[in-house]
Length: 277
Image 1 (tube, rainbow, N blue to C red):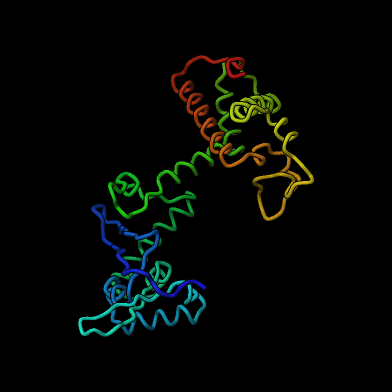
Image 2 (cartoon, rainbow, N blue to C red):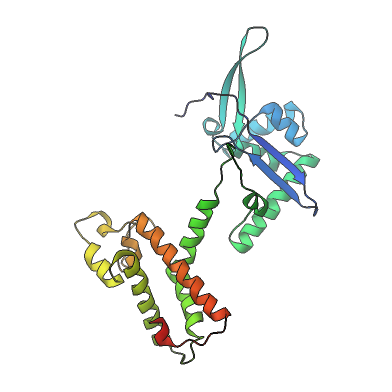
């Protein structure tokens, strides 16, 4: 069980406001990658009385929406009269859960923001806070910056086999001597894939699988695979045998190659299939 006491007074903030374009924005100022607000702060945030917020919190726990032990902490403090008190603090999941239940202009404002955020996520598959990413914390700011993590995830997505295959087909089609054929496209993709793997590991895809597939090792020697169990389709993918450092390097090389190939296409430079092979 986690320690139910906070070692220092939380200094995070949850700010909700209407931006210049009329849309609701929410900003959280985290401390140590988390956010804790007292009940009084939650009352002020949503513009409701303490009794109302208490009732919502009670119902959230009663409904099993959140586990009390995971979202509640206490901070010991000494008042001016010399007496010790325990102030109850609640983490971000509970702050959000209250926002879905409370009836007030601020609660409505919160739900508008949540709805537009969820809608964008469901339609596009991602949500980005452009302003936060364009204006990173500087100096000794305690606010965490996840920009590098975002870049790494984008590289990994862009370097996924299906994404690369689709881009290779598009680039392949721009070659002056291109003749539509799924077989030719597949062979071209395999050639490019082997070159990219060799650049990072010194082995082609087939050589990687031959070198590292081992029935005596846990999970056949795989370092990653889809789902909870290894399937036949997992052991034939060379990328699944790479270490984390090798995956990062492969992602960077793939992204550089895609950038170069796309740049050639944008410049409308005549390219032949042999130029890529």
